[in-house]
Image 1 (cartoon, rainbow, N blue to C red):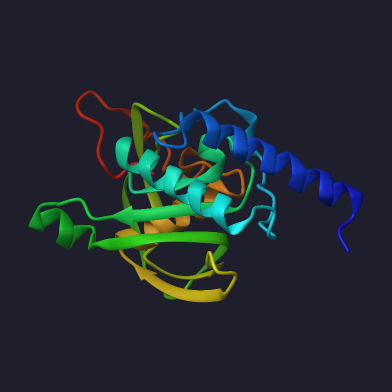
Image 2: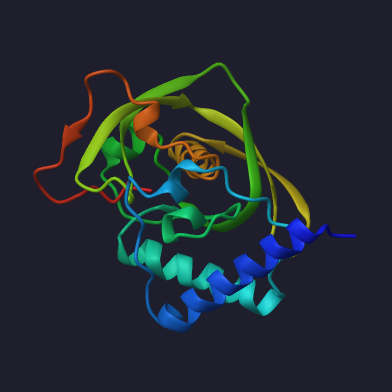
Length: 204
């Protein structure tokens, strides 16, 4: 049985989601920027607070927002929702050099609930990383090159997935968002740089 506090949290989240969908359901949502407290809070676990139709509509809104940015990942706190939900997708064309050096291979669309990751090898990789919630900047971030992601899918089934290369970076970046962590917290000292030309589509 849910406690009174849990019931209030679920009601509050439903209200926030319904309001967001009413305003932006057929378009894209505004992306919250660094400085907003929602980006520095641990998001609440998803435990069926939304009905299937509302959850599906929210995921589609997040996907459209991610595409429009453009980016390769988006976490619910980035549109102001403190819940453990993220979407990832990277089908952007890249040069052969980028594909090889950054292990940037296509990542099909995936929505994850309550994700956690663990390294699955000792490999690490240092590459520039950006964020849709820290616009205008990027920095070098050292990440695990191979991770196992444990998550719940939209049907409520627990899953394990293996990621390597750039998709592993995206999975870590989005999961970090759900724990109140921004990429700048993990950036190599002295590497935060202002973007003076077109922002890279590697932002998440």
